[in-house]
Image (tube, rainbow, N blue to C red; front, side, top):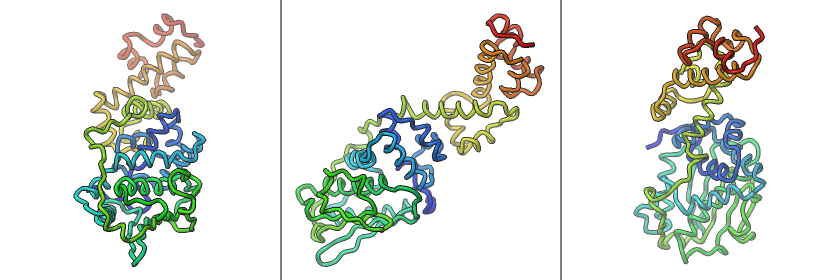
Length: 339
């Protein structure tokens, strides 16, 4: 069972499919996540807790950058066709629509704590409600559309011929991101509720319900930019480059800079067959050789830029990396000499 996080937080799993689609369409994932203080490493860690408001804002920015107000809804519909781990568990063994919703509410209560699901039933109508337990700041157009698109699609897929778009009413704070093809406009209502309500005939609860989702083993997921590890490596290298002048920069301090847990970072390093020292020294070597070859910085300035306060220490490190002294390397590789 996933560790609970508190109402302010949501799992990175929510963000991942949107980041993948944004990347596939040419969006700058690193910039959007960085703008909202979300570490790119969460793209490989679906269970990591991320501030929900940051997730909401990042998805809004993705839609704006693409100029597509239906971006969130389109990804949500696709996700509904493949299923999510939580709803897969709820759908397993469910015979009726009511059975499925009851299981979904139970699974959510046990695994998620930034929203609350409920089912209210009268003689004629049933109301499936999702209440957010935090008050988001900024626009939530995409988030509202995502919830509506995802659950309406799941209901349509599971109910089959029993689903009737003319008998369903979706209530959200905003309708701007909901595609016209999802439901007739008369089926949509605006309200200041902090969440989502889907109303339908109560006799649907007795209707057979089955979802024929692709198995997780067969599902092929397109990686972000040739692989989550690749994009994480770029992010880490850029962060390390920014802070390379810190002479005593260690793994623990670097993890704080990147907002990564040391165990997660160590696992990434192990999976990539490297260590923090090796990664740091390789970048120091690359930056030092570039500066010596292509700039007029003095050797002392180059040493300071790559984290060595004394030219003597830099000289020893550079000889270990290249077999040459910095001054000899500069002479043989065309660098400009200021002194």
